[in-house]
Image (cartoon, rainbow, N blue to C red; front, side, top):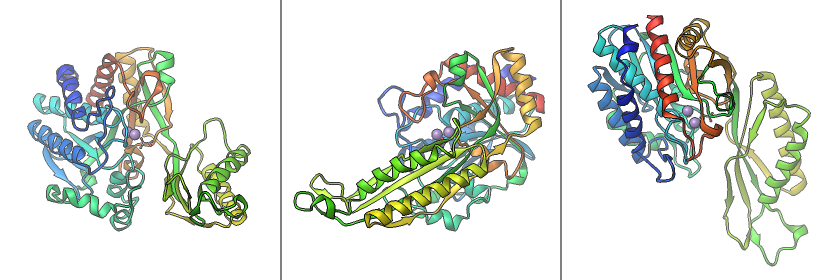
Length: 402
Ligand code: HGY
Ligand code: MN
Ligand code: MN
């Protein structure tokens, strides 16, 4: 109970704004803080100092996951502090700063044993939730190190920039569970006017790079029928795949080509190579597999018809996971106590570190509304009163669990 009385909403909001200053974009409340970049490392150094000031022991594992540890067995709270290449100020940051505030309040009260984490590369500069994927054992450090970003930089090279900060592995056995607070990043709570979403499940995801290699050539002299144009192959693949997926998907299924690299990417050159990201998400693991079959079959047909060489990067992904019943119950009870009748249970369409952590311990999540449902964009925002409401619900749930 006590911890809820001493969380300081002003300190919480001030720290959230301070974290935004690392990589602030200048557009709205946007942030540019991709994993292992200068702003990310500076933010992690600041966060480490905040954790130490809060009375927590700072440890950083070889991936750059940053922990502020309470003594003995503790409940872990947190999220991530890296951002998308163009991100908002709350995605991940909210869960980390809320955790910091509640753990600090707990230290000041001398009651609860709460630890804090900011996972590294949740936003997948190199993979999918890479930092927590390695911490949970889903991905080996060796396999992770071989992953490259869109510029061709290897994760091993990027993480070496944090090498002097690393203290060593952090043992998951010291944690009794993990709760991650996050913005919803979708339209549901904003549309209904509800204040809290208690997450029931997180969808599954698959993600891989696809490459079409054709023939680079002159854009003025090469007749259309003789071209092996890699962009035309991507375009035809996309249209055919969209058509075929209609037989497989539900209204909740989503798929995205979010990154396309054309080589050499010049107006007067028929592009010889296209490397693009293919990502799909669904709550049903079997459907994820059927979608993969459509994607691979369609890409192979396009390659054959257009004289392309087809290759794939590693298939990354996670199965759908359910949140822990006891932790969900605590979040439901705290929601009912603090925002009676103004909360709902809901699935998460976004992926979160909680998916990885669920392999190690019981996990749960709570959402606060996203204005207009916008995220992974500079416009991402939430009413500050709603942020504080989420902080209070999490603090209450944590107090009740203890
Ligand atoms: O893409 C996701 O769902 C997460 O924000 N990385
Ligand atoms: Mn996030
Ligand atoms: Mn995100």
